[in-house]
Length: 429
Image 1 (tube, rainbow, N blue to C red):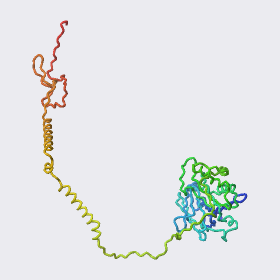
Image 2 (image 1 turned 180 degrees about the vertical axis):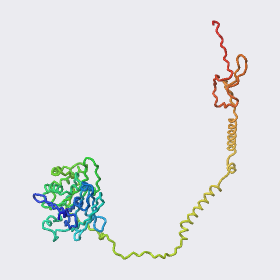
Image 3 (image 1 turned 90 degrees about the horizontal axis):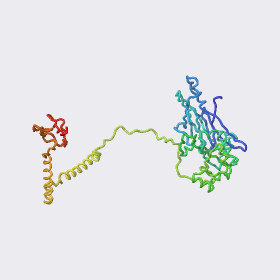
Image 4 (image 1 turned 60 degrees about the vertical axis):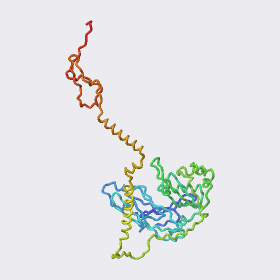
């Protein structure tokens, strides 16, 4: 129908002359059939989910509704470990992507997709049933079987610095990258195996300047040996340049440079035919669901009597006894072990006591003299005699005036009964 739009799967194959991309769309309860070991991409388009919500009263605003998605495995709070989800903003589409492994085959994986309209607070929910198939699947078409042929023994992982994961998941961009890899590698079959954001590998969030990107790891697989160009990074000269944080010299880098900036020091070349399998003795992880052990039986309401005397001794009596002993020792040391003045004097030599007594006596005498000292009056404060009558002019201060704060020279402009002394005139005048 018109609403049956499916983006459930993207299997990419490099033909001798062109890149073939198979895409399907699905937003309802649909079954999708990705292949094990091949990149799976499911796009959650906002345009379709807008039809699930009632129209907004204001005209023209319904096309710009902020919609976010929540995806989880049915009956569980999160997605399967191989499946990732990304949505950059509420106004962009969400993308489910990942690479299922062969151990995930045989059991349908139901993903619950819940769309939230942040403007109207409405929700819509659909189920996506993922049936992971292998090349022997009877329900798969011949073309799908050919596309999903796996495993490819030679796998190379590239780190692209100028891309984000949602940009790399676009079929056109991924097709261009695989086309460039085909020109360098020259394989008969080439598939995209996995795509991982650099943030999932411990990378740092880039600064929002100069259009910096997070970076993305792209793993591809082929059926032929690695080309000489891809192995140039393993030469001692390029290894030395990588250790010095310099770009290695790769002859085929110009075939990628126009669109993809590859960090050749981070390229990984793996031949799975030579990888030694590691067997672990760890038990199976299981389903993650606790076994059914019957109903829960709570303890009986009749509790047994318990003696708290031992707890009282441990928590209160013992610390109190220790504190009392310490208090008695401290009191005895401070009060009962004092020597006293008489015992101190008996143990002190007589000459030292005499010196100490004389110093105390002298100190007391000096302090008493300082209280009763008398200071002679300055000449400016003595009584003034009138030069004519001979009368005594009283001083400018009373007898009880504090002499310690009196200046040595006093002006006599304010004296009472002050009489100017006539000056003698010269004989010429």
